[in-house]
Image 1 (cartoon, rainbow, N blue to C red):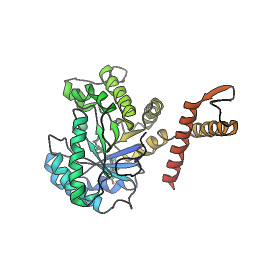
Image 2 (cartoon, rainbow, N blue to C red; image 1 turned 120 degrees about the horizontal axis):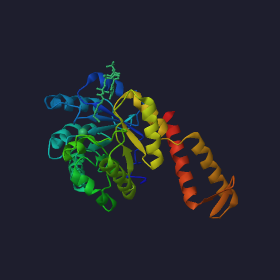
Image 3 (cartoon, rainbow, N blue to C red; image 1 turned 90 degrees about the vertical axis):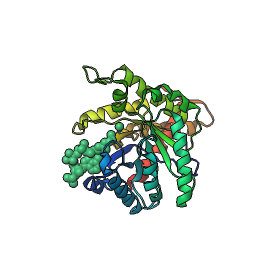
Image 4 (cartoon, protein in one colour; image 1 turned 30 degrees about the vertical axis):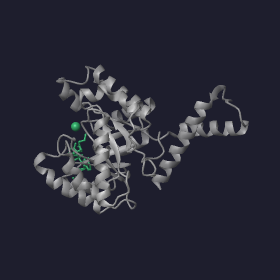
Length: 308
Ligand code: COA
Ligand code: MG
């Protein structure tokens, strides 16, 4: 995972990204105390077109009332697609200093580059340090985007900190009447898109964000699905309801057992001095395990700090 973006700021870590419709005062009022690592103020699919001007105003006011630096959670904005209302959205919100922009419905990395240029200009206009606004791309909403995911491996996109995948818009785009099988599992097309996003994110050195769990009253199901995603390498997940945030945060943070084992691995290597392998409880651990253990401890201390 990359440690910093072009503006020299630490990469914002995203276990949970809670979407809040940008036109809803009641939901915006719940955002501060949600416990999410990032709140995503939505100007896209959860806002009817007629409400867009009001939503832009509300989102800007919300950002202005929580200036960067004195802000927790991170505040992101999901704008409309670049071939739709993106520019108007950006002009309205960038002055509020959002931590990041979620870009939906891309066809590939080129749109992320275009957004980066827009942000260069708007940050300059607003006196914001160049590169401070991060980007998370929703990278599977068109068939072209799925086919181009491998291009993220070689793209030079310093603002990009996360890739997220979604099934609903892709189903619409390909004319599928369903995206799950009779057992409720993603069909092959969506499993392919999901796996490709995971690999593309890792290849690009950015966070891999699991899609929404739509059944927001089913906490057990959310926990199971999030645990599975975390064990596959996803680093965070979209939330659509405040009740989903705590279960998601818990599953995408290292567990107590993982932290204990990581400490033992790091200690064993330190104690053995300069060796490439150690044995613990009859199991072999080598350098990749040591690297992983260090990452686990780093994440653990980061989340422990965040909870203070
Ligand atoms: N962010 C902040 N607050 C939220 C919220 C969200 N995403 N979803 C619900 N709440 C609030 C509700 O307003 C309610 O508080 P209130 O009584 O003070 O109004 C409380 O949490 C409990 O909500 P509940 O009654 O259980 O759900 P609901 O019927 O109000 O809302 C949804 C259900 C699905 C409509 C709502 O969760 C939602 O709009 N989610 C976001 C959808 C979205 O952004 N989609 C696009 C990204 S995939
Ligand atoms: Mg959508």
